[in-house]
Amino acid sequence: MAGLINAAPVDKPEDYRNIFVYLENRDGQLQRPALEMIGVGKRLAQKVNEKLYCVLIGSKISEMADEAASYGCDMVLGADSPDLADFRTMPYAKIVEDFVKKEKPNIFLIPATRNGRDLASRIAVSCQAGVTADCTEIDIEEDTRILSANRPTYGESMLAEILCKRHRPQMATARAGIFPVPEKVDGSKCEKRIEKVKVDKSLLKKEIIEFRKKEAIDLTAAKVVVSGGMGLGSPAGFKLVGELAEQMNGVVGASRPTADLGWITRDHQVGQTGQTVRPRLYVACGISGKIQHIMGMKNSENIISINIDPNAEIFRYSDYVIVDDVNKVLPALIDEIKKYKKEHLKKAKVASR
Ligand SMILES: Cc1cc2nc3c(=O)[nH]c(=O)nc-3n(C[C@H](O)[C@H](O)[C@H](O)COP(=O)(O)OP(=O)(O)OC[C@H]3O[C@@H](n4cnc5c(N)ncnc54)[C@H](O)[C@@H]3O)c2cc1C
Image 1 (spheres, rainbow, N blue to C red):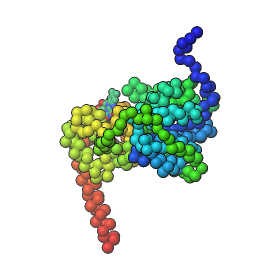
Image 2: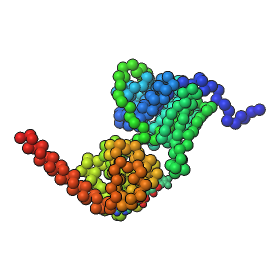
Image 3: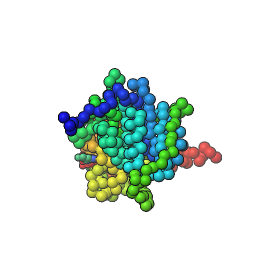
Image 4: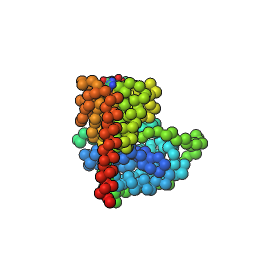
């Protein structure tokens, strides 16, 4: 009978091997989510004794390929053309699709960035695979080589494990900022297969006239994040938050309602629908600790919370807590840091005489 619905793939899952990761890059630089993907890919590949392939697309990509190798992958598959200098959905998707169809990876991981999401859905359709989007935990079953792709659901209150048993590759996008960047290693054994490609003009129909860069705050790379919440009481509270952040060479984060109310711009928002951070120090000022906020900062090395409520939820996730009015605590902390710096500087000057 003609017209089979949900036809089984022609190839069997056993025909697919190795782990692919997509390396997001911009202006000739690998982006942090690309390095995070190498870390995850490496872990999975080691577990099932397979190889890690990095897919790199762009213009003049050899230095980026070297950098990828230095984080410990087995192969860089590259496509290089001046037409690929900036992310373009159609040609990028076609190149990745060709790589996938030729190499038949068992698993393909892509960062859940704007471009990554765009790419993942197209590749999944053209390769008749599914995608588990926005994963926060990724693992593999050693004996079956089935990807265990976990993503938060029901407003981050539950973690759903999604398995793709029949179709290959098993695809997932991974939330940026959640996974650590791997240590550098000797990358000399990594093979690089970089092709100069000619991009089909029919895939370049959209012309990029100009890129206007928005001055967005990147919280993901910050070592110190001082975040303000509704407990600040008014937009003016962010002046104190900013001052404390400045004293500690940090950046300002925020909870979502403060951004909703326009107390601060959206690019400062931390959490499920904002940025995911993992600084050495996170200071939460007047933030209650709802799960959607916690998801974005729980991997911080040290968390200090200031809240007037002794039973505040955020205290459960904190290393140090201060139970008091944030508008009293912040000026006191700023003063103490200034005093400490002054003393320290004075002593350093005396010592250097
Ligand atoms: C789908 C979805 C996605 C979401 N995404 C995000 C997200 O990405 N990021 C995010 O932050 N939220 C997100 N939220 C919203 C989230 O559920 C919470 O509403 C939000 O995090 C609460 O922000 P808050 O802690 O600043 O405010 P509140 O929950 O109102 O907490 C204010 C806190 O300040 C304390 N306080 C009050 N006065 C003082 C004072 N003078 N001194 C010290 N403490 C004081 C209070 O005790 C309280 O704990 C999302 C919600 C949904 C449904």
